[in-house]
Image (cartoon, rainbow, N blue to C red; front, side, top):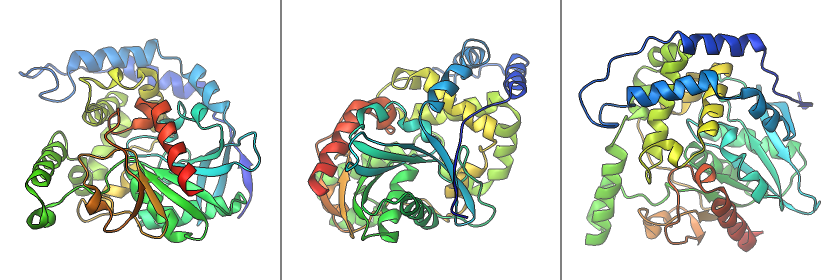
Length: 362
């Protein structure tokens, strides 16, 4: 099954009407004692967001924007893979595979694409996310990496770069492991070189402070890895049936990931947050997208790979010498603006770093 089929998003109006109806009939919980986000998503904030989603948010306008990007579906390793394929005017441009994170979708890169016109850009939806097929058995980042290497080969790209952040930071190195002779470099948004408890004996005093900072950040908020590893079916039942429950969960996580601001829409356009939520709702992927958590035994920072050069978006709180144990680091700038999802928050700066790194290795 090597056919590449053109794809367009065309959501039935009945599905949008059902979403609006469910939002309008939401049963609102009373606020618990506490200030701000102390107990989770503030009820007033969630209610205002839900009312805008059901009344002011224009899905059709965003659907048209997404459909302006060439989209396709092809079967790889038994699963459909949906992807954007935006070619550069220069036929000799370097192909670039962008791998989104969780709880994101391919929408993570829509604002960055305009800054990456000098690449042939391929943006797949990870299996279990968006319009890609859903894994029906055990699935891991190595298989995802092999699938994406297969996708690039099917598109005729024998030499290309790979980028990933969050879940993508685990998958992108696996693409290089699957096809080291074809990948010129791997660029990740972060995660490499984060110190762990096992590293403590060898850390300097300053590095130990970094360790405690990382531990404090990682331990704050909702431990989604533990939650989804323990009972993904339980929580997915609520997110699949109630758009308010789904929206609350996504806003909770984006609030934790946008570490430089008080609420997520201060860093990421609110409409993009709702495009992301709408895609989860319409495709029923709240549960299937969490395979990375429920198919692992414990959380671990991404390790990377040493087969091809690696670039990292930001330095601290990661420690370069720790990242270099498993990676050939050739691009490690000082800390850069933005939080966890830099392509959404600062797409121009993100694209500039991508361009600088691949300019060194291409």
